[in-house]
Length: 94
Image (cartoon, rainbow, N blue to C red; front, side):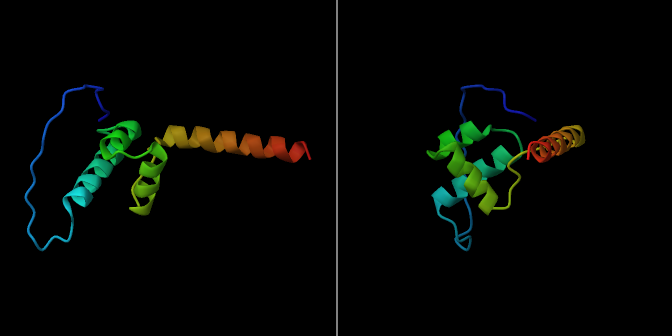
């Protein structure tokens, strides 16, 4: 599901009912954040589209309770093991 790195762009026109309390900017941000969360855009691409820093994009995704990183079970196990090892090293150096 990852992005392709293509430089081609498409324009999307979206009509929402007036009862939806979003500005065009807010709707665009929600769409871009969701595309980043789903892996269709990288965080850098999403930040560029919104005209913000990658750190700000991550902050907005966090505020929206969106996944900022995707881990496979294997990735998570590897990260957990690394954390345990680092904690042991720190404890031994005290």
